[in-house]
Image (cartoon, rainbow, N blue to C red; front, side, top):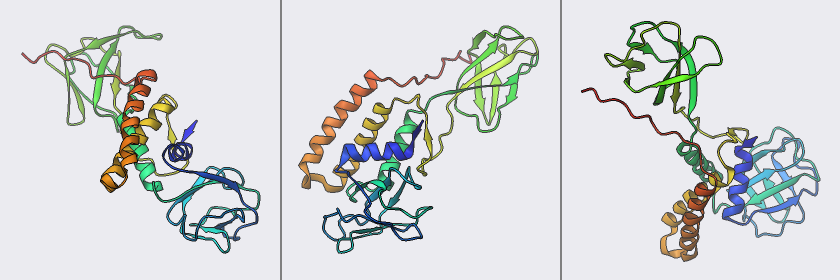
Length: 265
């Protein structure tokens, strides 16, 4: 099972330095601090960066860092559900690639690579041309009608249809002639925005492809922000463009193109 938490952490590792360590003492009882005496970075270095908890009661949760205080080696965050205890493994990154950006890039890629789904809720009515689509189903790619009444079902594809105002409409001469046969709809689902660590990303989407596509998005943002001030980032972007294309070839996403339709003529 792939979560936004794990993808975000892996993407950060691909983009920037992610330090991993273990807390040396219990944090505040309210879950708002991590303490690690092994931290050595300058005061405020991690402000607005990201921390990921890898073990303990709050494992698989991340937070945007409010403040990092070197004298007390304390990271302060919006509260975790539980106190962060000593010996909790964690990962931390600075604000070069903020968490909102990592989430945004991953969401954009998942929307672009989203996999088609099937729905078999509709049943033919003899001679009926219009069928109201089930809730949340839109952007039809393919319409097929079962050739048997009982399972296992084979399907015959229909090419004479349109999707109009939330309804499947068969064109004249293409409406089903017999009642009781399952209509299988292949459609593009409306993707939910990825906004929580626990949000699930389909394992059917190749992980390496998703990560390299997201890295490409993040580097485009960075290059657009800094321009010629960071020439190495432009080099990294060009490398990411090549690698993302290679990953798409090596681990193709099983997207399904819309079926051709017969002309109205």
